[in-house]
Amino acid sequence: MIKKLLITIIAILTLVIGGVLIESLTEKSFSGTESVKIDGLNKTISFTDENVGENLIIKSDSKDYYGFGGETIFYFSITNLSPKDQIIDVVYSLGGDIVSTKRFVRNDTITKDITIPATATSTEQTITQTTEKTVWSNLSLSSPNIKDVVRKPVRGTSKNGFSDTILKNETKVYQASIRGKEDEFFIEAFGDSAYGNLDPNLWAYEQKFNDLNDGDLNGQDSWTSNSSNVDVVTTGTPYEGAKHVKFLRTTGSVNATRTITGVVSGTVYVSMKVNAISAANSFYFSINQNDSVGGAYVYLSLNGDIKVYDGLSLTDTGLNYSADTYYRIGIAFETGAGGWEGLSADTWKFNIDGGDWNGPYASFQACSEMAYIQIGYAGDTNSYAFLDYISHEYSSAVVSAPTQEDVILFDY
Image 1 (spheres, rainbow, N blue to C red):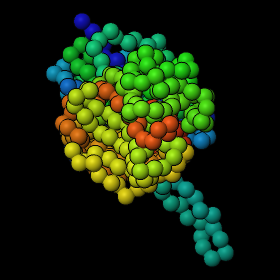
Image 2: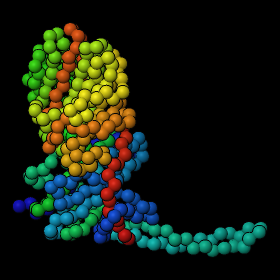
Image 3: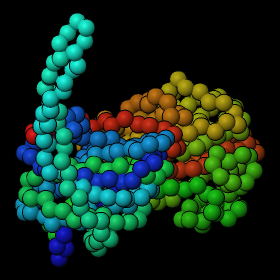
Image 4: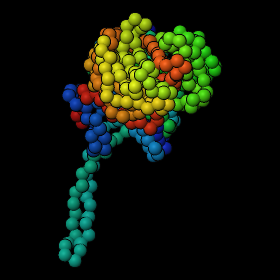
């Protein structure tokens, strides 16, 4: 039996010169909008994911964090909806260093008199100035106390953290400043009868192909292909690193597939290019439930058109691509009712090179999760296409805004 609650924060952030500061706010009853007052200023904490099967509800003030110097701070809350109190271990796994932790004690109202000197046209005056100051109490950092329990997919490794307590139906809010160069985080919470996971992007699978052997992709890192003409190569200017995958069409279409750990929602990015535009060349990337239940499909299609499947209909998006040019394709998807990126169940959308999102589109079929990648190319004899860098990240320079708005109200 697990006797404590664990939270793992993995911050993949692009940030900060300064220590990691964790501060815990006193919990209050909540409803409506979450607005926490820190040193007199309101801080809204609104982002959450689908929370399926969870009774520790975790939210943050953003789904990713970026900084290019100075100190970057993020906030997150944990609400204990389990039927009993929890002793917690808060464990961090961050791209930067953890320097200290503090707990919120109270907000004090500070009143002081300010003297304004006399001038040639006025006498000396005394005015009263009122400010609010948040009072904190230091917490000791400790080694991670990660429990061996069934959990959702996570990324990264834990470093250290602190202990705390959350009563039944209480909400606690924490503040962290992080030193490092990353862009995302997740928070995971474990208890003897409670679990919670906040991952701004549940997609965890990443493949850069640089560590694979040159030559046939089939059989490497669980990839399967229908042709010996799907190869890991160094030629053709990879999108990232030294290697990418070449799909060469000699006779018939060529494809590559693999299974991944299934996720119900998230965003995946992939880089794609076609060597030449013609009436025959078409290259697609898809994420699916399995090899017989299809999900989201993006095509660099015939005559330079970009097409997608909207349900069972192959649809022209009105967008175009150029020959021998890498495009970074993003696919955001939702299979359930979690509302990831504002999507409803069994819908998805895509963007190109970090631009505006297109969609939403209906999934090819209703999927319970996305657990299968399929890539295919067909075209003129001896034509080819390249694929590279499948990841939850676009790059460390892309910023996305929070999309969840159901939040908590704290009154102090």
